[in-house]
Image (cartoon, rainbow, N blue to C red; front, top):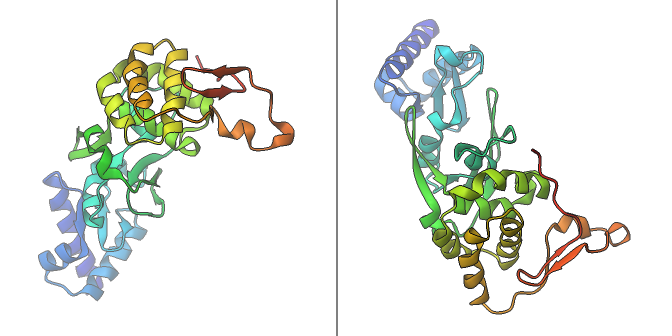
Length: 275
């Protein structure tokens, strides 16, 4: 009987894959197979042990197509939009992963990074690690969220402008100031200056200051100028450190190399760019 249930679920998954669908919920499978929750869970657990199925979240399943058997899961773009709809949360693919998708490929990105207004634990899905970063005000940056076509549908991704701001907003996710500067060398040309200025209105002022300084140092003052005008309209900004990590320990804080009056940024070490 258990073998029959597993075979039925395998056949159901095969039919979904043949139709280009890799995701389903437990409720959908139970209804399609005409079985109860217990028998379905037993069959699903056996397929998970065989690496034919993963369960990123309670009640949400992703089939593993044969071509991704060695990976243990299909790529996250195949199912991330469906997963976030299952979670009933807005989201966007952001940070280093978004930068990579926009063509900034200096660094290999180890995480598939998601920004969402719900605090969620990371997901290990085969070779992939999906990591969630919390942003309460996601609706405020909606103009910087784009739709991107995937092999199985669509997903949401931050624009180059929003990606650049986020790299300074989440330094722990961006690999530090040297890595941020390196990524910006590829990303800057794709940034829409007017969108960057508009998004900077809802960004923390130190984030805007740091990004503006970096863009100018990298030779992209044309991208930063409208953002500077928007920053000045908010009043005089307090001085901020380019790299907060450099000034955490007073006993080991290096003396400033530069105090940039235009952006009111204290630079203790010039970022090193990976060529």
